[in-house]
Image 1 (cartoon, rainbow, N blue to C red):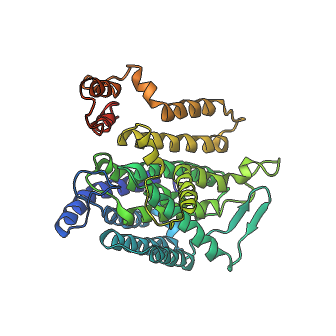
Image 2 (image 1 turned 180 degrees about the vertical axis):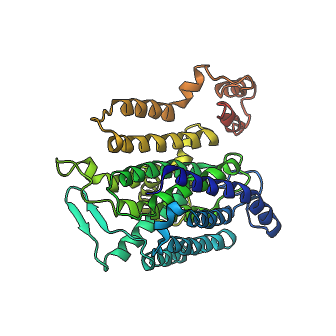
Image 3 (image 1 turned 90 degrees about the horizontal axis):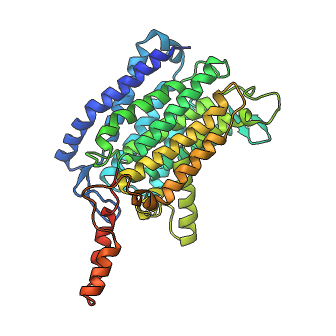
Length: 410
């Protein structure tokens, strides 16, 4: 269908609009007091605007309007209301998140709002057609099952993005990488005639990439503005839409002669694995909170990014590590789907081992002296020895304050 330049142009428009409107949104947020204040879970030093989702929604509407004016995207709009449904459902989750950013919204109310958005998607036809049961078969969804699958898919994606939004730039970077990977995959299916047309999935994916790229310069540590629930829920909806209309409409013939193969499962696996980091985080959160006997909506400090901080990584390095894991997972699932030759997994296994070692044993990496900072603070054992030798009754509480500065953050 539409050529690559058209997609990149619309994605560029989304990035530019987000980059232009985000500082303006920040100014308005400061005037109206729409700020996130520091607390035990938020490490930023001062109140920060947390309604970046306003810029996201503006960029979404402008990007779709630009695509509407381009002849190459005419099949997506002619006798097709799906993109209108994306805007309507996006408005619902945006308003829901915006209200939660300003005033607390209960967990049941959030779920209700997401369900309403899912119903809007169903009403405008933004749904799956096929569902792939692993190692069983492809099922054509009846009208009775379509709303249920749409609600569950949307709930899963929005919660995954919302929960991972715990460090500056983390959610925006992960979604940008995942949406880029899925755009590449959906374009591959389309060019090989394996995707029902017209399909809005690639367009929504590239708009999502543009929004995240335009927002990251303001959101990376130290963040000048947060996306808030309004932005996280909107990104979750956009990714849910692009993956459902591609993975749920890819031809059942997306398989090799061997029958139940990776290529049969790819439309189901790729949307899940490119968001492997936030999905794993959600699963761990469910297990952790179930074992603790607390509600799923109860906030805690057990997420993946919190664990990286406890391992000694600084906030920036923790974000980059999780970006790298997302990129590695995306490349891992895309390579077999795009390669015309037999895929070798050895390079990926090597990279997994290398990144896993660095993630877990970063102290040895920095202790090697290769990246030693000239302003590096004394090692932790030095003040301990001084305190024990010179001041045996001194308070040991001063020691942990030095620890975060031992390793330079990148």
